[in-house]
Image 1 (cartoon, rainbow, N blue to C red):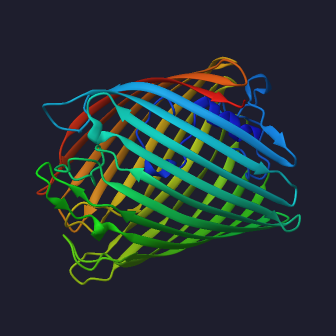
Image 2: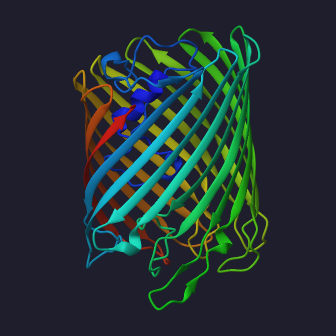
Image 3: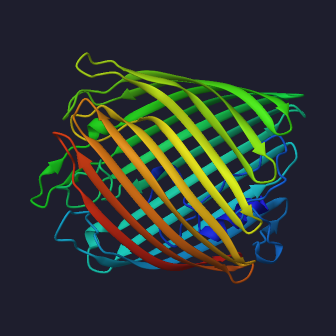
Amino acid sequence: MKRAILLSLLGGCSAAAPALAQQSDATDGLGSVSSENSFGRDRNIGVLERRRPDYTPEPIHVGTLELLPRMAIGVGYDDNLYAQPDDEIGDAYVRIRPRLSLVRPSPDLRLSLDGELDLLRYADRSSENATQYSVNAGALYTISKSDTLNLTLRHGRYSQERVSPDSPTQASRPVRFDLSGGTATYTHVFNRLRVRGVVDIENRNYGDSVTPGGEEIDQDFRDHTVYTGTAIGEYALSPSLALFVAGSVNKRDYRERIGPVAARDSRGFDLAAGASFELGRKARGSLRLGYLHQDYRPAEFEDVSGFLVRGELAYFLTPLVTITGTVDRGIRETGVNGATGFLATNMTLRADYELLRNLIISAGGELEKRDFNNIDRQDDRWTWRGSASYLVSKRMALRLDLQRRTQSSRGLTAGREFADNRVSVGFTFSGL
């Protein structure tokens, strides 16, 4: 619990839905490769995982409950607000993110509830203002020494970034959407064998936008629900090496039957094998290789299949420097007209340096390659980030964040190309 709180402090106030790839700024967290649930491989602790009791906020105890209020406030400047190839328009903004976390700790049934409000306000371009929120609930039930059941529910409202390829360039305001879902994870451990089953449901409901002339831009064709079931079996050959096999099936159901493209209903699966490992005292990671396939129901849509790779590696250069790399290749949904989806390959590399016990400097880059299905288009999206987090006390943390995003596109239906830079500073206040 305290480690999760500290990671949030290092980032200012962690986003409730990191999977949404929100713009990085001084109120965001960077995450880490965790040593938890890794067969006790904790000889090395990453910079962002390290416990810092003098700077870890303490929750307020209300009976058996732990309450932690948090407020992140940041100001910044975006030099290409609309992600245009030329005639860039910049604007300053302020971002306020209050968050409240409530936990009932228990060795048998741990309950948690947290909510966050994200207010983004621009100095001149009020059309880009966004009011986002998220609510998350969780229950971790320890059935026995060998069996656990983890349930999570999530709901939120978000504003799609202008830098997203799915964002309509002619829209006078960003597209808003609601995201709801839940995940159930059952884990059984028997000596060296660990078996895990996961069921996940996610629903997205997009709101329409309008052009500057007031014409409606329909987004109902993007509304969909994704059902995913995953099974993983992992066997530890030694304390430093475990082999595993994993497989998942999914169903993607679109509700709207009219629009720029027909309903992109599909079914898919992936199969993979791999290993999780610890290389002495220097590295810890995992690698999964396999095959993925997505079968689209409409006959006019091409199926997608290919090589699957997912991996992460944390390299402990020194006790004060952690280098983290990840790679992930999978099939994603899209709002680009004419495309049924895209094959995404993401590669990241980040270094975290503990300059002082309460001063963390981070720098990294990410390359996302998108190969769209059913249209001739390939995008390369680069993101470069740098940040400094200064822990003032248990209650306060300061952060500076720099970010640069670029996109290049090629093909007969190539998208726009742009460069966008953002700088922000902020602070987080935790507790009362």
